[in-house]
Length: 275
Image 1 (spheres, rainbow, N blue to C red):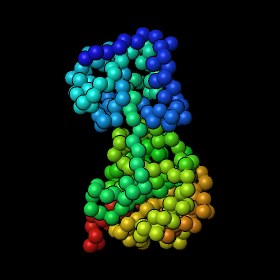
Image 2 (image 1 turned 135 degrees about the horizontal axis):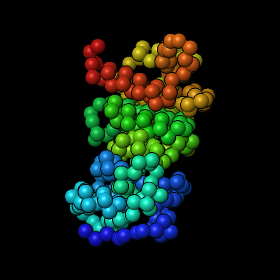
Image 3 (image 1 turned 45 degrees about the vertical axis):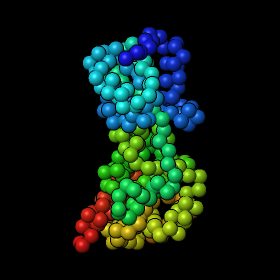
Image 4 (image 1 turned 120 degrees about the vertical axis):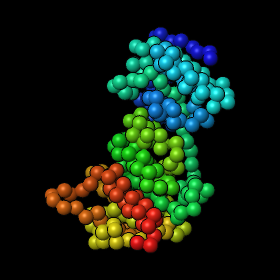
């Protein structure tokens, strides 16, 4: 394989790589984000890979892995070898593993969130309003995939999915879980209801517990901001409000935890429809 060797952080390619790690605006403009670490590199579908960056040590130890990924792309993908010092400079992790790649952002439409062609079950969506913590957002994606959700709809004010911390937290679900950012969350909730989706808002003012509803049909769970919860507009657009009962003196649950509880209740009901 042919590779370019870079030894200076002043190199323009290195500056661009660093900027992609730090600047959401540039990522959006380029429709490119950074995958870092061996596990995520292995999991990244070849069709998304735009460029591979490795240390010489990683390349020597994992030449077969890199060569296999290049072969899977079936096109010319640049490979750039960085010195350990340069790699550490651009890395977004405390203990760099010596491999990252520039990847094309996945893109979906609303219809993709409904699960057509993915499975025969009714759609199961998570709707997120202004979730701010990158770790929470990534964990929600990972949990959504595990629980069998068909898609995630996010308000424009939700954290950047392609933030390096979020990407790591998804554990590669970012490539498998359809998602859409929307400027009109309330309008989209209404449109989902018009299409037969029951939208359940997680709300502290609800009277009915989450395990008192039937989620075997087309369903969506609406989760609000970590500190402020749902806006009145979003909550008002939902079909129902539900409560996750809590004991002790806890006032609220972590957003990712709440999403997991709700998604897995739907999963349980769908796995045991007779119960």
